[in-house]
Length: 237
Image 1 (tube, rainbow, N blue to C red):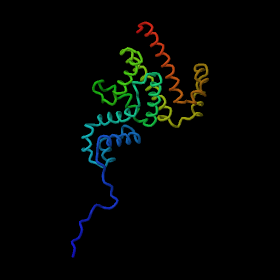
Image 2: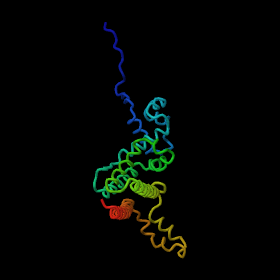
Image 3: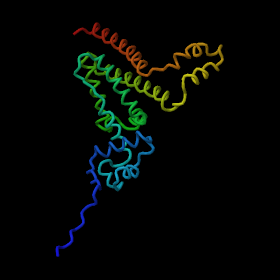
Image 4: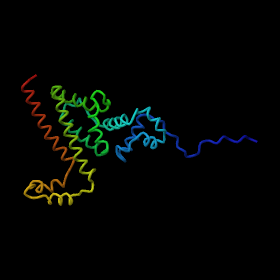
């Protein structure tokens, strides 16, 4: 009589995928996208990955490091080509690319805007510093001095983040506000105190984030081009 076979693993039982940092961060981003930043904890992430939360500390030493990793994961998708001689087209492209990422991951935007403020520049994750390095290279290559390039970067990102927060407020913070409610709200304002807002009600109700961003970038780039021309006239090569 032949000996009974040792039972193997149950059929259909999926083998767990081996963990790595990319997999951990991808799952962390999924949690943030679905439920917001407050939902992301080591315990919750462990549940999503079906792992002991303690095993995740190999890939992120604490929750702060996990949040930094999520920021890097999103910013790594931002396409920047510092060698492009057409710096204005490149800045416009970066702006629209960043807006696309923000709309895909709206819960990450506050993290991108506020978290760097709590960390000294040199201690920030490398992935969050690459856009700064690349845009500085783009602007210096276009003819801006290093100091001027830094000023331009700050103005550029200040505008971008301001626009993104404003656009996300329109569609995320108060998603039930529609054109009719907006117009009715504005028309309740005293006409003598707010004549211009009342007049602009249709334009305010028909907010187009992409067009608004492009118009703002056009204004910004026009000013930067004029500044660069003045600098080159004052200090010819």
